[in-house]
Length: 175
Image 1: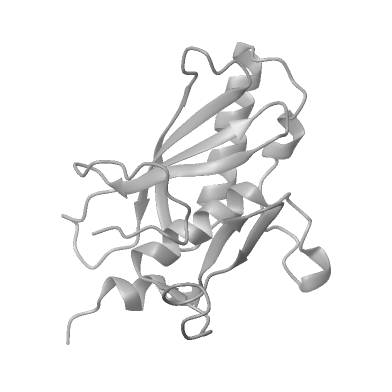
Image 2: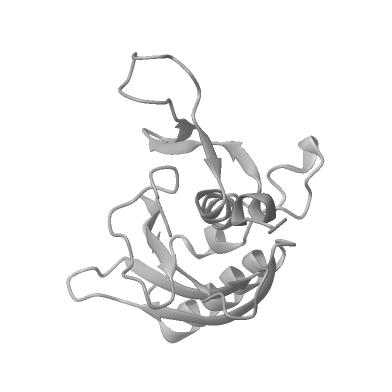
């Protein structure tokens, strides 16, 4: 019996971006069934890695997860300088590599788009556990707002596939 990506990455409650943070996702149109949706396989690993970037390290200590999260929040209010970008790379790499389903973070690039003075886009190439050595790494694009107004996942895909744009971790369907 072959091991599937759903088995490797598990299943969790689906989260969607809402006002002020993440909220539970529902199946179908709002109000249709009222059932809570689940994230499985690739959608779950993307959601889990995204939450590691969004949650402040130590924020879940009282729930038994003292090392969960990242230090990216420490960069809020910092100017967009080379040292800030370097810190963002280190903080993102440390947070993602702490997930046991991650074998290696192959690259973390920080990109600033023209006209976005306070937003750093972290472009991560992540090698996750796999049943074969031929499985391409995962691309994860995360926007960090230095002004503290927003931080979100822009998209995710496997290397060689187009990055899905304007997707919340819960609404992501990756191959």
